[in-house]
Length: 554
Image (cartoon, rainbow, N blue to C red; front, side):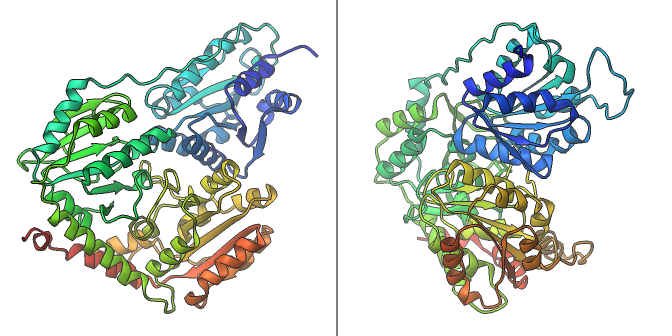
């Protein structure tokens, strides 16, 4: 059998180090699937929905910094993938989407299933193209890979028509060579050091851009904090880059009303390390607030009405941080007391919420038990919803990439697919999902995928029969409780119908025992946790009532 374009594509993916293709095949992918089968170097993971496949590929890209592939057929298969593509695009995660298409030279099906997928993908990808011929495949694959992995990373897309996949007239396959970010100018580093040294209340914010899979970046963040003893806050997507166990950790910047916001308000110079517009803004700058913000990132700031840093250090992050640590000495005149008082208040709040083991389960207690169950490098995968507020607030992350969060697109249904990818990348670690019942049911069919792959996963479902975040915001805004309630299936029986183990937590004090037993037994476990939803409103009210003035006194 002669070598085809589909064979060349699979060879190119394997040469780039692709280990997994996540997806659902269709008629138009048959020759690509055969090339995968005969090549044997890449594992195909059959998923139950294209969105789940895309989320798995994105999580693999985030955890490894390498390329994963999500594959779908044309039409509805491609449109189902767009949410995951948008997530990877906003969150700067490398992945490659491969979609099939009808024969471009001999289409006998009219307009059936025809969607202009390339145009549809353009706003949510760094590169998109149809492969028009076998001769062009090599060049387009290289462009897609270089785009996905280079610069500010993100998703790329290629459409492979079924007749092109069978072509034997092939062009050369040029290997990819990836460069590194330039070293920042010494002058910009010195200026940043001078701004921090002359500050009265400096603060470091560790943002989502620091989660890059380069150990030297996290090491440089930690070295800077250790040397200067400047307090720090983490954004949701920056959690774990700096160790959150020490007294210098103020908290996670979540909502404008929390204690971390008081620390941010107290600071007069903020070193914003790894900030990217990918995340929901963690604080809003004002022209008249007399606060200096330093943007340290491989890429210049994209200024807008709430983020317009006065100074920028642009270039390789590890080199920038190492240079800053060398140039900056602690200043005895720094006054960290107001910021550290806010940190103590945050810890006290977390402890109060974590102490109540009564039924129905309190979210703060469940999060604390999970933190004690997990080792430093174990991975917690979060969905989007009110549970994410509890988890990012109360679960300290100690190592990079140990908390998977989408705070860029804010996708519900992401946590289980992301956890599946995490377990494939790190089979030696415990991987646990925290999800709301709303998000869980959006991609719960991937339980079958996890069971079929023989993975060990624990899925904790916060069950309040509602979209809890929206309900809490309705109440906090003085609006009616409307359009957010629903009824769930029996989650224990539902899990067991997929071949997983189901548990219902009637006594919260037994949660840790349940976790230990599930980990010892192995396999996929779903824990139905009836949640005291009143706690959500109580937390909202606490955060709304915080008076930051109390932390500014001497």
